[in-house]
Image 1: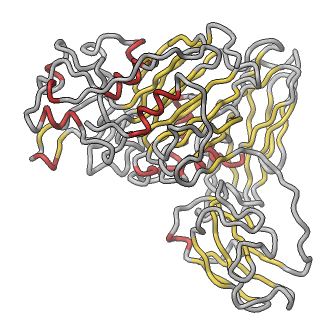
Image 2 (image 1 turned 90 degrees about the horizontal axis):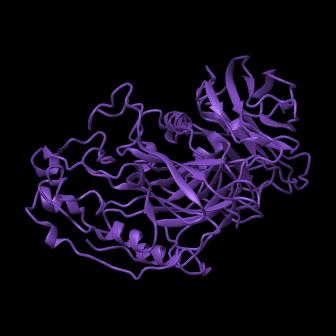
Image 3 (image 1 turned 90 degrees about the vertical axis):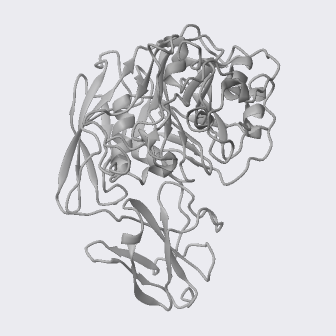
Length: 519
C-alpha cells in the first residue's frame, strides 16, 4: 500500500508548529446568520422572480445606461462561492444572457438539484452585479416541512446574548416570503425569532434548562409546518461544551446515490446529535449545503470538509492540508475552550485496497508494506481530533485472534494506523472497545456484501473509518459505528430508497473534557 504524501505530513504536523502555506484546490467556508451592508443600486433597475411560473422565470427592467446584450443572469447556490466585489467564486449552476433594457428569462432548473439559490444579474460578461441578488428555491412549492421534527441546537449560557440561524432547516429555504414565528417558549420566554428564521435572546437565571421552543414556518402560499427546538442552557460559569460528539462521514459522492439525500443527511446528523463532522467525498460543495441546512459552520475543500455546531475561528493551512486533508480550529467556548479538528480521506487513487490482497489475491500479512515515523511529543493545551476515511484497516483490528474475520490474514501492521499511533494519536473506537473479536466495528460496507468484480465473492468487511484524538485532557466516554438500521438498508444496487445515505457506517465518539483545554 502506498501512503499519500499528506498522511505522513499530517502526522508530522501534530508534533510540530503549524506552518502556513497555500493549500491545494478551491476552499470555501460557511458562516451562518451574517448580514452585510449592501451597496446602493440604481432604483430603476429591477430583477423579479416569478415564483408561480414554470420553468423558473425572472423578469428584469434596466435603465438604458446599464442595458447591454452581454448582461447575463447566473444562478448560484446560496450557501457559498458567490461573486464578491466583482470577483468570481464558484461556477454558476445555470446561466443565460439577459439582453436589452427589459425582458424575461427562463431557466431549466429541473437540471440542477432542488434547493436554495441566488440569482445574480451581472454586467457585460463580468461578475459585477447590476441589481441586488434575488433569493429563490427550486423545490416544489406545494408543501413545506422541516427536515426533522425535533432539533437540538447550539447551547446558550445564562446572561450571555445568543443567536442561531434556523432558516435553512426547511425544504424550501431561501424564499424571502417564508415567515417564521415562535409559538411557544417554556420558562421565562427569553428566546425570540425574527421573521427570517434567526433565533436570538439572552437567557436568565430563571430560564428553563433546557429551553424548548415550538417554531412555525409559513410560506407565501399559506402552507405551514412546525418544529420543536431544544436549546441546552448552561449556568453562568459552566462550560458551554463539557462533552463533544465527533463523527466521520463519507457522503458517497455527496449523497446523490440516495433519493432525497439532503433531507436524509440532515436527519441522520441531527439524530446522531453530533457537534463536529469530518466529511469525505463532498465534491467541493456539499459541506456548505449541510451547514446551511443545520445552521452550522463549515470549511470546504475539493474533497474533505469539516462542519461544526460551534464557530470555526481559524483555518489551518499546513504542509499537510490538501484536498484530502483539512484542519480548523473550533471555538467551543470562545478562547476558553477550543479544539483542532482534521478531516482526512485516503482514496483509491492513493493506494490499492489492502484487504482485497488477502481475500481475492492470496497474499499474506508479510506482503503488506510498513512505514514508520519517529515518535513525537504532542502539545497538551489544545485537543487534536482527526476524523477520516483511511481506505485502509487498522493494525489494532488485524490480530491472530481475528484472522477468521479477515480471510486468514492474521496480524497485519497496517501503515496508516501505525503512523497515527506513532504520532501519539489514539484510536477512539479501540479505546472504548479494545477487543477486535467481540467488537469488530466494521464500517465498510453497510450495503455491499458481495463483490461483483470478483465473481460475487463476499466483500471483505473492515473498519476503515476512524476518529483519532490526542492531547488536551480528552477522555473517551463512548464510541459507536453509526447508521440507520430502521428500516434495514437494502443492498447495492437496490439502495436508492435507503434512509442511511452512505455506503459506509460513520464512527461517532463522545469525548469528555477532564480539564480546561484552554488554548
